[in-house]
Each structure stands twice: as C-alpha cells, then as structure tokens.
Length: 238
Picture 1 (cartoon, rainbow, N blue to C red):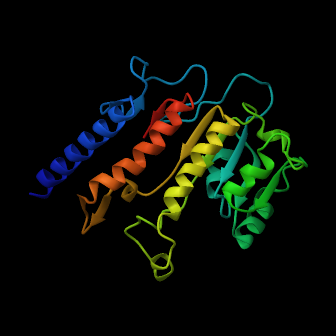
Picture 2: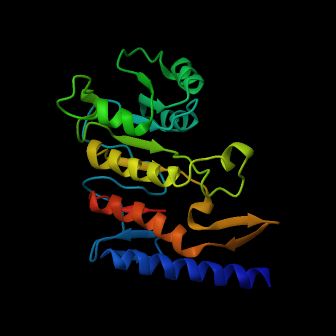
Picture 3: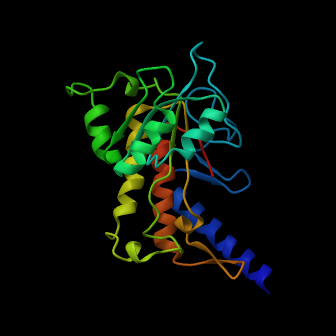
C-alpha cells in the first residue's frame, strides 16, 4: 500500500511540475529530471551553465576553476568542490562563527584573493557584485566564476523544524531562493549546484515512507527557481 501511495504522490508531483513549468513557457522532462526551453536538448550545456550528475571542469582557461559558496557555513560544500578540483575563492554567510571557521579552513590557500564575507547573500551581491560600487569585486564579473554552490535556508518548509525555526520569519527562505537566482543572473557562473531538503517540493519522510503535502505552494516555489534559472540561460537538472 505504501509503494502505491508513493507512486501516486510522485505522479501528482510530476503533474504539478509539468503544469507549473508550462505556465511559464518551459518544458518539464520527467525522464531526465530537468526543465528547459522548448526544443532545447536536455544534455549538458555546451556553452553556459549546467547542473548534472558529475561536475565537469571548464576547459576555457588554464587557471584552476574557481568556486563561490553561498550560505557557506564552515565550508562542507566548499570542501567537496575543492576535492573535485575547484579552488575556493569566496564564501558568504551571515553567521560570524561560521565565516571564521570557513576562513580557517580555506583562507590559507596561498592566494590573497581567497575571501569570506560575513553578510547576507543579498547584501554581498548588492555591494561586491555591483559594478560601479566602490567595493565591487572583480572576481564577481560575469563569467569569471566557474562554479557557484549554494545551500539556502530551509526552515520554512523543512520537516525537521526546531524551536528556533518556529520563530523563523515567514517566507524568509522563499526570498533567499530568489537571491540565489539573482546571483546566477548577475555573476553568470559556468556551473551551479543548489542543495536543499526534499520538503522544498512538499516531499517529507515519515516512518520511512515518502508523502506529498501542500502541493501547490511548494511546487510553485520550486518552479519559480527553476524557471528563473532557465531565463538566465541555464539548463537545469534536479
């Protein structure tokens, strides 16, 4: 019975995703778990940006490819990218203890350019990622970053809410998804990886079974992120 219910839930999810993507003029390919513009091949992008199984290194430069970590924490996402061949370049988090730890872990890379900013992702983009601003960072020039990794907050929809999460500002995390999209639009990295919990789609785990809850708001939230990235000329897999 649980297997049948799981299939029904996933069928519902796929239907909602297809409808939401179509409403914005895009095509949802269930088989490839991706969303694209009509008529676009669902394989890896050959020109600009892709999320896929694996992390191909750009061949456009002889320099070691650079990674920026949004919501970096102490840097576990950064560490994974480093192990895959990317050079830590920037970390952003608004928790001071976390940024201090990130600096300890990655600040001594033999390159002065490695920096961590204790600020919100939105403020960091508006200051360091805005041409003409006195603090503009050349590293954030369009196309200069090879990979952005981001693990935006999930308290608004996570099934593992804590006491602190219950006091979380409603819709705050939805706004952070839009900030992530703005980073991709402004910085134009060649590749990106965005991590979040299954509940971003309304999928939660209860007693080892998957269930599907709150279909409409969850799917629309997720599709807004997908379609926003596609409008920035990315192919998206999830």
